[in-house]
Length: 182
Length: 273
Ligand SMILES: [Fe+2]
Image (cartoon, rainbow over the protein chains, first blue to last red):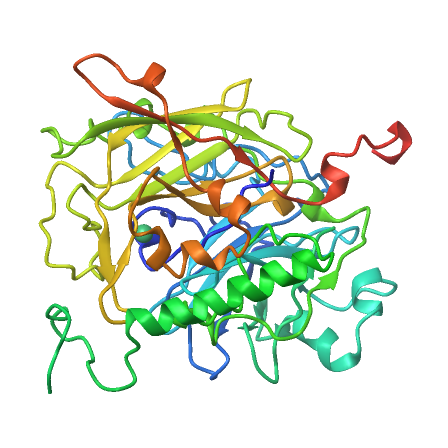
């Protein structure tokens, strides 16, 4: 009796993204990493109407998260951003007009050294899960089961100090590995 | 060039590459028939829409061609998920008719239901988000160029947290149908977009709720991208006369059951937690 998925369509942009959605790291935290990239379609064109969500373990390994990703001002109802004390573990970023997205977060722990990603877009009828690995951990069961060219699609590339690049290819020669969580 | 249909929306391509409704209908019909044959031959009915469903043209370049990779990781982060709380919502978020100085135009409705997991257990204290067109079928979004009026008293965005029984409730106005450019004379049935979280990130769902008896159902490639008839029916809310309030609003009921990794609903032995 599961409820079917339906596309997020083109008009989620005024509803789902929120101020500071990509600012998972507390402002000014010295360990902050920047992870960014593009979303491409099967023709290699940027996807300007995608929404990426991120979920990760906290640096201390905890996976419980804390509320407050969309913390609101009860007077004006505006989103005033995370309180910078708790690490919510959740981020949400729409792609720009050029298909680009940016996330600032804290490093995930060695016990789960990746960011879980859920991709939504106009034209995508059912979201897609993938993972961003920051480095290639030894003995990871998912990566170990993939041929090298597929494995590479899950590995973020170093892009300067504290910065990583990760592109999502929905289709095509460089198609990202997407996951079935069964 | 002769046109047999109504005038297309301004700026719409009218060249030979723009399909007409009968072509879309034929494509949908063929795909539904093939899916029904597969089920008759013993395949399980498909719960979710196919990511590759060509009658919805935008899906063509936006679906992977490789099969999904099964993640059999009992320690996956995706088995846990984000949490939300009272700081993430305000009281007015669930009443879309009270977010502006004046009242929006349209038919006032309430939409209520429960968010459940695969085992039928309520999803408690989780975030439900909705967005929708106004009563005229226009979104408060710059990219929506449908020449129907915006309503200064309606944005069309709502949020709430589910209760202990998994229940959510919104007060809003019934959205209008609206045209889009998938094919010539394409119209979306009235719908409300829903975004849902379970207890695990792997239960995440974005979907659309429809209204009973909509005459546009047979023509819509998005609704029909769910090839199984019974699954499509699960996208349609029920009118609930018991939910209607005298001289105030009409009520609709729609329960949502989240898919997701089995490990989130099979009781795991204590030592595995
Ligand atoms: Fe819509």
